[in-house]
Amino acid sequence: MEKVEKKKIGYVITALVAIVLMFLFVFILATVYLPSRVTDVNESIIKERLSKLATVNAKQAEQVSSYAWVDKEKGIVRIPVEEAMKLTVIQLSKERVQQKTETK
Image (cartoon, rainbow, N blue to C red; front, side, top):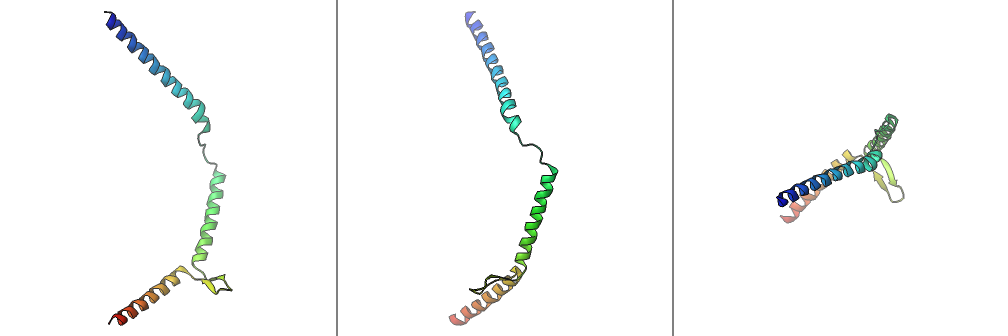
């Protein structure tokens, strides 16, 4: 009988400890996490960020599609990406033809 009562007491103590730990976890969650969680983003901040993004995207689109000097003294020029790809294909085609004629 005493063993059965000791087991029951052990189960009760285990259950009480589990309940206390659960309440402790909820308390820590409520005091630490909830006050520091991310709040909703203000609409004005969203509009400001979208405006900055549009400005950056427009600047980048202009840079990849226009001619400009990178370093005038060294003769380095920026050309549109589409033009650079065409020139690269032409150059590689010429090199490939030259390699074929040299191997024959």
